[in-house]
Amino acid sequence: MARPRERDRCPSCTRKLHQSRFDTTFRLHDRSERLCFGIPAGLCQECHQLYIDPSLITMLDLADARCVFAIESDLVLQEQALLGM
Image 1 (cartoon, helix red, strand yellow):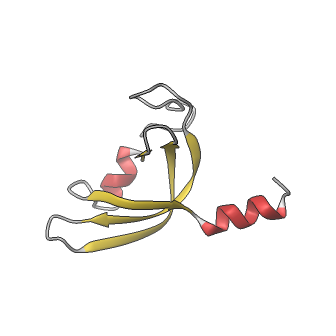
Image 2 (cartoon, rainbow, N blue to C red):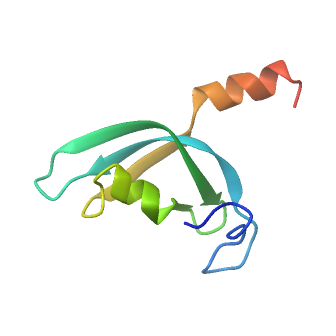
């Protein structure tokens, strides 16, 4: 996924992406899993697809992995609750 200001719409349905940080599970080619916390990404709430910056995927060595689970980070939700959002 490109930076949020460059990619703020879903490539499939063109709806606005929900930009946040997500705790994710990636399944690797050997069927093992890697947990990543606080990943910046955009979520299409219509298509249920998570878009992550390709350079971040490369940096985390997840190019051959598949994201099998993502949930908005508890830290983000706690921060929003503190701010009264």
